[in-house]
Image 1 (tube, rainbow, N blue to C red):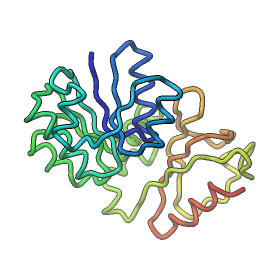
Image 2: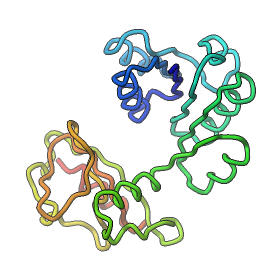
Image 3: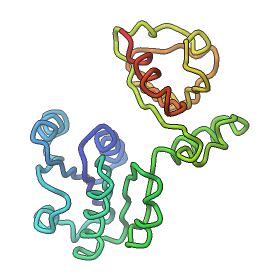
Image 4: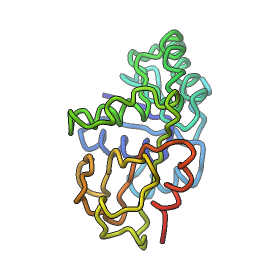
Length: 220
């Protein structure tokens, strides 16, 4: 399949690599010249510098023959607009948009985006798959419960490297929901899970503890 990805950040980068490894033809649209250069230097001519919201840009990269269009920038509005242009101007049969705010899901569906994905759903799904009885599987509406998601990559020189999860001085009512290692599969941490450099930690915490938890996970 020919798949176009809008957004060459961390999510777009790893999605692109996974799809290329599966044998798909993939092109990333990215506005930042530095990000484009980094991707091109590593993977070749798979990144086009341009705005995925502009019809002319989408026409230039052959969106009309794309089988799937995925918008994963950090801006919900950009993701919506680019998917709409791909769907209605270029007749792409399948559009997928990343959501930063889960409350926008109904609007995206109403405006024709085929699939929406948000970090809350991904975390809940991963936890339910790994540990069906895990208590945080019930956190379906984080905003209403005053909870937020903290996403931090453990620095190589972090003081937390080598420590077990049970030994971390986490703020009250904070939980590590998912660990995405630099190599290997994502997993739900348990008490004796040892943190490694480069681990991406996704945690759930009361909103008032967000800064404290992020500071802890970034400590060096």
